[in-house]
Image (cartoon, rainbow, N blue to C red; front, side, top):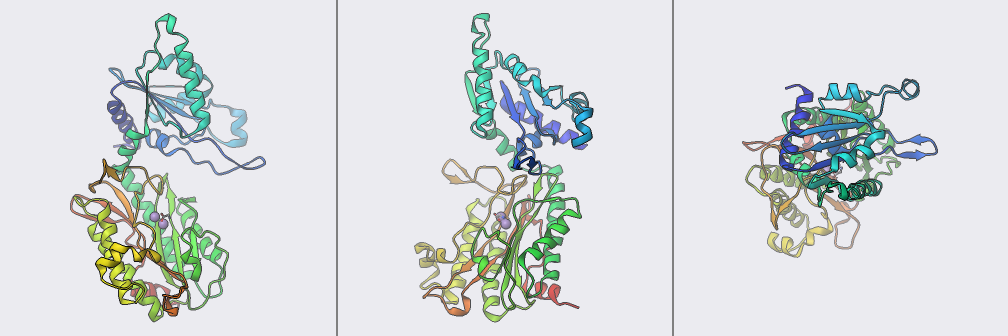
Length: 434
Ligand code: GLY
Ligand code: MN
Ligand code: MN
């Protein structure tokens, strides 16, 4: 299958799920960083999933029914502007190259929408995602309503197109998995590079630079989220992104970083000693988190439900916390009273895909949903030990998280990020400097 045919097939699948009506899926707007400087442009994930088209100011319109159609609205070619800002397809070339049924200049969108919405019973649209688009779509619908005396009806039913798209995106096709495997590989190499580069007295941002270098030189020009490079106590701040501190001999370094490749995120956390050697207290805690992660990965198999990897990790963490006198009582009582939450306060993973916290429901009705082949998720238990009267001082300020990206397969699972060193021996081996 060519790349284009994957996107065509997704549009056809969405059209058949819609059954009837019109869908409008805009891409993301450009965003100003300051003055006349923009953030690097990132398309909307839903739009890209259906189109493979990366230019801003684009909108996809789908018409379901007996003669389904997909229509692109995009920028016209403009040789003058292209001198400054680079190539743009223009609607004719875009229609041909990306296999749309029709394409028009974006300037015609409002006028054409009034025409295309006429007599459509249902309007599918990302309701509430963007206030400017909300107003524009409602205005178009009102304009259709104004044509009632001509016998033209406006859609009476408004549905969120993301209900259908989120469920489609939850199950990755072979094209997506190919990209996700490559994205994961680049991020694994970046973590290995970070381990090799780290020395006491370096700054967190120097290690961040090593990660970005490795991403970029493999064409993944952006991280999927801001890299967390957290030495010592900084690792106990879950969303630490300051990345400015000096790395201390004897501390651990927690790195949560992954690249985005062709629109797909990877998301890896590794924790390792700044000086290349775990001390006994660090090692004890590390082995507990590693065992929790192994238990969670073993539970991430088809048929098990979403919460089972989390529950498996919790059980191992509770057992370990009791051994280290961080928690007291039986495993059951630690789980029941949730006393582990002093040291482990987040859940064990999330869906992964185009968005790092990817779309897709976690429950069906009020039940955790079963894991199924084609789903991709992270498994990321951790522990974060802040100074406290009830904590042995040798464990203070240790933050550890271990995170891998997992594909659920028919037989079990595949760890996409296996190549990032993870055991104590593997890490110490990689860090043994020549
Ligand atoms: N890096 C974001 C997360 O692990 O969820
Ligand atoms: Mn994650
Ligand atoms: Mn992460």
